[in-house]
Amino acid sequence: MSIAFLTDQYEITMLQAARQAGLADRRCAFEAFTRAVPPGRRYGVYAGIGRILEQLPDFRITPEQGAWLLREGIVDGETVDFLENFSFSGDIYSYEEGELFFPHSPVLRVEGTFAECVVLETWLLSVLNHDCAVAGAASRMTWAAGQRPCLEMGSRRTHELSAVDAARAAAIAGFAGTSNMMAGVRYGLHTIGTAAHAFTLLFNDEESAFQAQIDSLSEDTTLLIDTFDVETAIDTAVRITEGRIRAVRIDSGDLIEVSRAMRAQLDRLGATKTRIVATNDLDEYRLHALREAPIDTYGVGTQVVTGSGHPAAGFVYKLVAHDDGAGNWMPVAKKSTNKASIGGRKSAVRRLDDEGVALEEVVFPADSPQPPAGRELQRLLVSGGRVVDEVQPTDRVAYAMMRHAASRNELGIAFDAPVDGDVAIPTVHVD
Image (tube, rainbow, N blue to C red; front, side, top):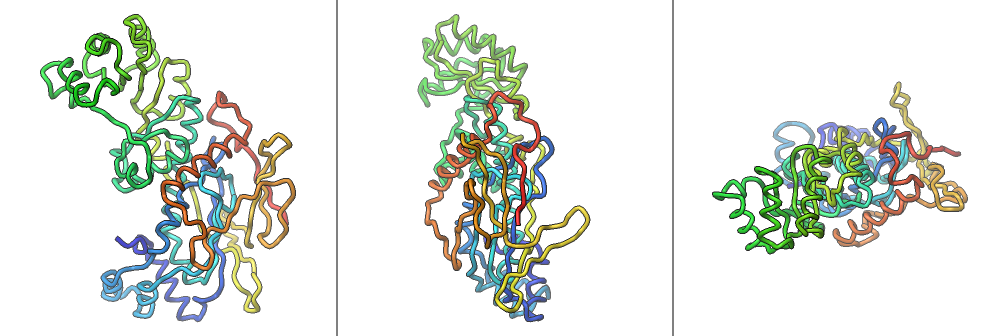
């Protein structure tokens, strides 16, 4: 599958018109940013740039796709030739993956000819809007869960391919494992999962199902205990393992009350080391409410892979400057009502106090000296079309996880604080 054909038609019709007008090779700078974060959210989480770096070298259409464009009369032969032989030769500046962002943070700047920058638009926005939405939701969930691990289990609740990318984005924001096997293979993520209710119902009785699972996977497994009666299932699990079963999972009912009864029963039976895993349509609000329950691990599905009510992060990709014909950058900006952009190539730093707590996001002209007392946020990731940091996909995820944890800790917000609130720090523009 060619990623270059995962695009909107107007990208390539603009390309053709610009070529015919003699402006396709004009040097341009585009920026990706959000005008806001969803209401109540204190920050966004930048994710997806690692996938962009991995796929950028293969961004070109196939001869079969080119032939279709010609048959449909969408663009001419010269435009098709350009797309079939496309090779990005520009520069890309970006925040590090896992970094936090705020309204108008210039997380991505793409510089090159108009032709090569514009054809990337739909693909770039598709990746960023999906991955940042998932990572933002996942970060709120790991924040709400405190020190208890969250596991991603949402593959069946989204498109089969986006499920892989969702697992990656959730991992960046601190999820400890995923049920998605392809994500495990591709990105080196820890995979999890044992059995569903169907496995228990396959057998004539629950004890036989538990015993078969233990015979296959050992006592170091997780038994699903709410197919029938929870109390009876725990009695059975403890009895056949002599209290050595690693974990039990509950997927229904009032999780606070049920988990308290489970913990008391397990302890009474001597299974004090058996952990309790809870699933059942969890989101950041329910996770926060479950802090007082004796639950050790959470499994989250639908809400994390769909952005917990905000399936797109709101990114736009705008032309902010182009060559003035004399080799100088000329700022440009749209003035549309409620959709105005800020012209000029921009960079950013995060200003911190003496204790390392974030105070504000400072956005400044890219050609100006960096403001003092700020942590630089943009890095050159692609130079002259070449990816600068040749990092393996699994290493990119690991680095992004560390970056996210460090950036979130800079906010100086206690983990027991409410999930919702105002944007954590302001974005300040300086000339």
